[in-house]
Amino acid sequence: MSEQKPSVGRVVHYVSHGTPNGEYLPECRAAIVTAVDQYQPAGEDDRFIGHVDLCVLNPTGMFFKQGVHQDEGDGVLEPSDFRPAQCNGLSHKGGTWHWPERVS
Ligand SMILES: [Zn+2]
Image (cartoon, rainbow, N blue to C red; front, side):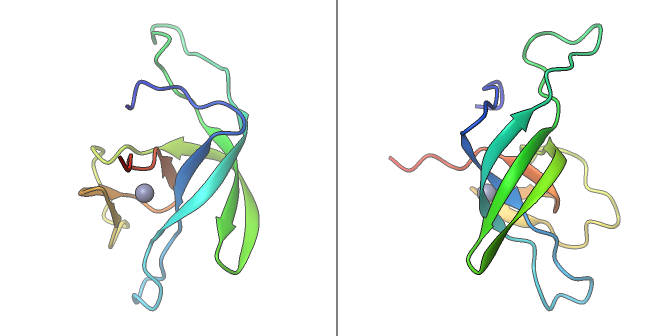
């Protein structure tokens, strides 16, 4: 799944930032890919995924976010990631995107 490359128009999950005191928790939001960074650093194979630009759809409004990095849930959490979002049994940092779980 993580080897899939994003493309314009695909729907992914964007993880919202929670608030430090936990009034708002990070949550998965639907987001449409509006642009994909095609830059591929030397040494990376073609599975490399750069950042994407997203149109994030919240239940009460939407916003645009550029330069969002993927976090498929196996990354190392920073101390500032006080409470990651749980999605499909994995932890995801706020401010990142990942593929939604498949519902069969
Ligand atoms: Zn999710």
